[in-house]
Image (tube, rainbow, N blue to C red; front, side, top):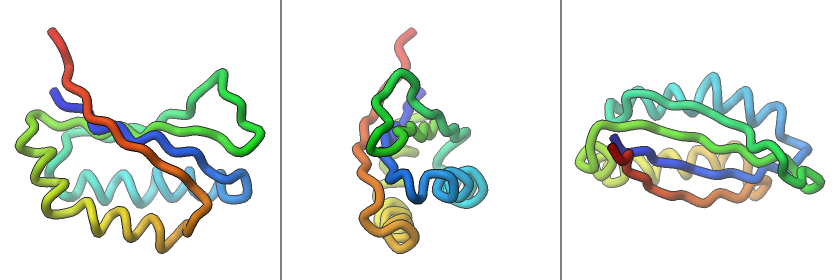
Length: 101
């Protein structure tokens, strides 16, 4: 299994609305691409939230091929949509992980 992890620090002024948007719109849109089997949103605990909460969005896929398809076909549009909604009120970094068995 491949996990595409996006860690996001969100400005406190948008945190509640951003969280709802992620759960109701953004995560379902990524699942509709067909590249991922599941998506989950987590809030990091034991973090200094003085400049806003930190979240992790995790998207699960069966193979690197499915992830690469998402990157090639959908990621630019999804990132543009996020910036269109929230401007510079968040910072994100991405990582790719592979489950070990």
